[in-house]
Figure 1 (cartoon, helix red, strand yellow):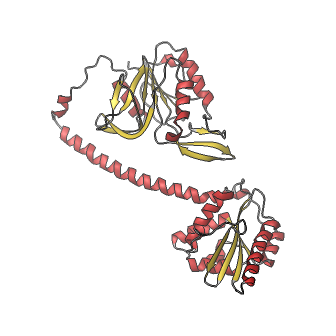
Figure 2: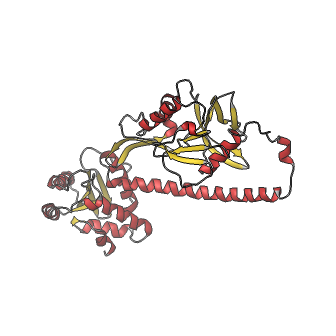
Figure 3: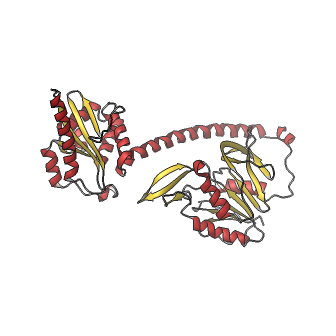
Length: 411
């Protein structure tokens, strides 16, 4: 019978491995029922904190419960897998987190959870240093985002840079920063490096001896590594694009400076204008001169539906600028734009339409109301080439009331 292993993770893994029990972090089985317990902290859902301070994690009680189990265990061994390349989210507001930063910039949260909550008082990991490396395990390169500044108990080191990526903290406790792709990969590593006591290690000189299909297998490994690198590059590009898309989608729930910054970015793209030199003097949020039209705009993110005051505010800005032009004997065609994100705490499906009263005021004032979701769809159509800047400009200049995407598509 092989060694029994329990793999403890935040979410259940869809793998079945002989003599391996996969448990959720909230309900692990008795630790001493296994020869080794692998505690995997590499899950983005672990590193979230609802509190504004961002100094802990939401599942802290589950981690503490495991600590109590560890304190009372007698003979089992532990492998702690640290997170790699994750983002720490904190200060929840409704269904999303207001702030996010790379976990490497919040290492104190990691230290606190591992040293003060998870591990017993007698066992502590030393300084963890951020640096992306690769460690070769069984002819496979495993990535790591951290290394340990230690001199003893070393189990694995990175290729070329020679940084410690796995080491034994104390009797029965091992910590690793290696990013294993599967449970099976982590288990294979544990069986070879932690549970195979007494097995003669392979001498370095043996690696230079070729036997049977060694060369063929090594070429297969190299070719697939190249493919993996290519796929990883494509994934990185796709992830960056998704990150950019998430930023644009933030206009569906944000307000204040965050909303204004993203709306500015969108307007500059779809109207081919430059707002970098626009100075916010606490009047209109933007003023864009395009050909024969000057757009006077207000940007709002509110928790209620569109109010008459929101429309009147744009009108006041427009009248103030009209007076400014009149004093200088200048004439410009002015157009009012209200870019607004109403009922921002609700899903799009739950948001009520703009009331008839407000629509009448907008029509009377020659004000065009552009809701955030419509602006986002306009931007989407612009990026795909379905509409162009001239169409958007004409539609903005020649319509009042509430803007719809169809107005532009059929303009």
